[in-house]
Amino acid sequence: MPKQTGRDQALRAGIGVLVAAAALAAHTQNAPTTGAPASNVSVAAAPVTNVPDAVTRKSGLRVEPMTRPARIYAENCEGCHGWAGVSVTEIPTLKGRIGYFARIPEGRRYLVQVPNVALNPSSDADIAAMMNWLLATYSREQLPADFKPYSAEEVAQLRKARIDVAADRRRVVAALVAANQLPSPDALTIPHASLY
Image 1 (cartoon, one colour):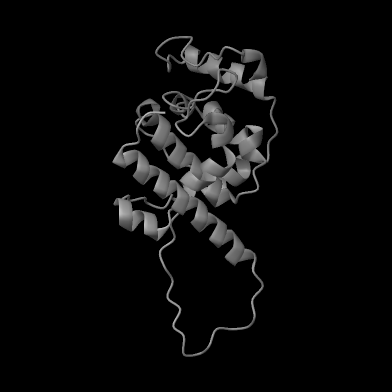
Image 2 (image 1 turned 90 degrees about the vertical axis):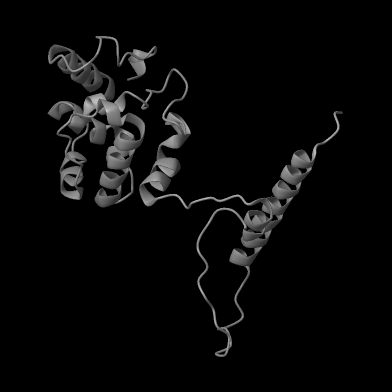
């Protein structure tokens, strides 16, 4: 086994602190309460973060809390589409591609009508914010110059429709090609097109 460097040791120690903090947090959240805190005890709200304070002080690590739209993406979409908008070949790539769909009305509708968006339990406002974040984060360059952000009202209307994902995707891509909105006809090709 190679000799550990100081950095390796610090990393191992940090991981140990994270595991211990997570266990303590889980225990504390599940522990029964024994009553209200004493009236002379001041309880100040600490900033919410996903990294224990002991780790940040010791390592200098700075982690910003995720925005709500980013968290909704992480909780609902990232498992398939990946944290960077790229995943396995069976799953459509978002990075550098999804913005093309927003160039035509039927593509804009399609993005909200895919089942995992349309049927998501999040509110219409949260879905609108997540879609706007997603488009700006992963595909800003492909958005039309006059892109109008989704609104909660628009999402509410669009989510009512049920679509055939594969057939509608083919129609939208064909419409983008016909409107000369793609750099090449195969810009949105996915290897396993029968799935989408």
